[in-house]
Image (tube, rainbow, N blue to C red):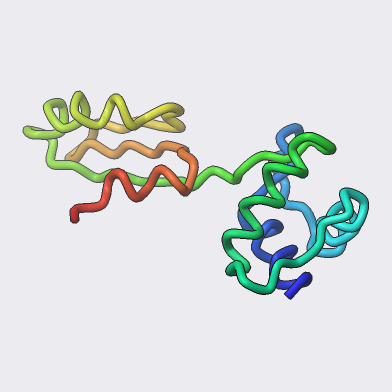
Amino acid sequence: MFRDIATIVADKCVNPETKRPYTVILIERAMKDIHYSVKINKSTKQQALEVIKQLKEKMKIERAHMRLRFILPLNEGKKLKEKLKPLIKVIESEDYGQQLEIVRLKYSYFFASVLPK
């Protein structure tokens, strides 16, 4: 279970300076350094989120960004872009051709706010 938690953390996080992912072995070593103990009654995902919070205090680590591409019809693109603006933090590129194409970065855990219920 210890390795599963480290794998989840490695999948979800990057080094903020290089934007490259950490290896599972490095995360396992960091978990040992903070003396993290596995809790059998909690899921591995919950524990991974706890580990991320604890590791932020000891090392440079941040949640990885998800790249999203929106392709919108040009006639409605400007209206929809205004509605998406509060959700868009970093726009990587914007292209007005036959259609409006926006490529942006966001934290993966914010993605749930966009999905229809």
